Amino acid sequence: ATLTLGMAHAQTPDLSEPPAIDGDMVGDHGSHTIRMGIGLAESSPQYLSSQYFADILAERSDGRLTVNVFPNSQLGDDVQMMEMMQTGTLDMSYPSSSPATTYVPELAAFDLPFLLPTREAAIAVMNSDVAQSMLDAFDGTGIKALAFSENGYRQLSNSVRPVETPEDVGGLDMGGLTIRTMENPVHLSIWETLGANPTPMAFGELFSAMEQGVVDGQENPWSTILTSNFYEVQEYGSETRHVYTPFMLMMSERTWDDLHPEYQELVQEAARKSAAYEIQLATEYDDWARNRLEELGMQINRLNDEQIAAFQEAVQPVYDEWAPEIGEDLIADIREIVDETMNN
Ligand code: TK8
Image (cartoon, rainbow, N blue to C red; front, side):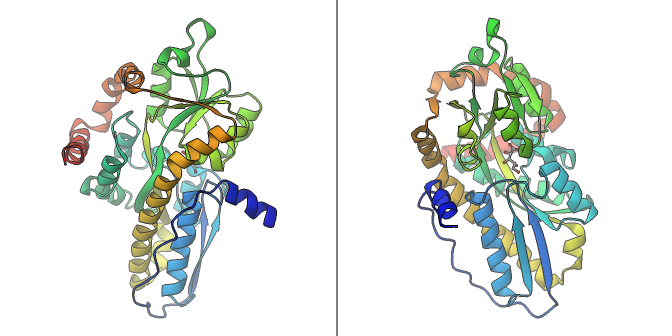
């Protein structure tokens, strides 16, 4: 355990402690054990904030509400765990928004490349009425969507060559990189447009696919590349920040409906508090994880403004293809929120 703890510590920056748990105790409305599956490792902000969520429920219910968190995609991947919540065989999960577009298509706005230029803008959008209406849109799907938090800015990694330009992705005569994507049509479009060979795949299969050379690369935030040990099979990183992906804290509607209204209120409050803490951890982790990956041997290209602009230019056709599908008005509403944060 010490070694494991030691290893985990080596991969974990000096993170902020969770806020103290305050608020009134809820009444005795029976005991519930809640099973929660997540995709990432114990050292990830996703796991640490899920534990904080569990602690709030346990403390404020005098131990009557127990949440058991299963990390590392043990119980399945995002798509499978959402199906399990629908059928009531899993109580909670914490998928990315991207695979959830099959339930609420408007979520694909978050997959539009370079739409959210700063974390401040991303947080403002996730806290907006626009985002709340996306959470509400899950009503009737069998899933109760509780809160948005930060998976984060996605960065490209690969095992073949340094990437600084779209041409490095497409490879011209060398042939495009084979890039694993989430199961989401906009992400497929992004990497096709860049000349890559995109391969949609569950997160849980990704490490071995990279290890066996089935895919050349993938894209995820630095903290995921670190905490899921992708650096062991990916030599090159490129700070593309091409998409900001939210996580979505979700509960099976069956589980939700079984809870007394006072318990439901506590779950919703704990979801919001743990999501805010997750965003804080993800923020603290981001740059630290990139620097740690370089210490661990990854060659990371930081892209300058014109290199980023070249990627933005190259993926413009993705907007042309997807903006009408996602909704020009919705995109305009999001851009308005983004502009407000940029002008303050
Ligand atoms: C973890 C996933 C992951 C996501 C992906 O469950 O699939 O690449 O970015 O973090 O949600």
